[in-house]
Image (cartoon, rainbow, N blue to C red; front, side, top):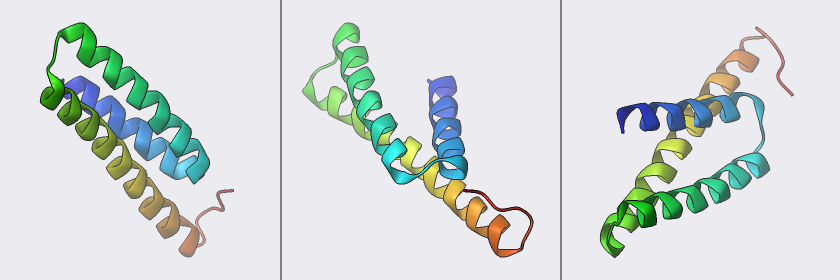
Length: 83
């Protein structure tokens, strides 16, 4: 689970650095489907499924936010222009 959380955070961070919000929404929709499939295949109940979905979405969105902060910092200091 730690590896999955790390991968989700890196996906969010990378999309925050290079992609726009509409791509994040597509990633989150795909992540929702994958989380539901994982929960059903693992035999989770309703509460565990809801927590799995919320945890995956939260980790990805937090990584996206950090990517946006880094992108804003880099572009404000004139290091490089992204997009």
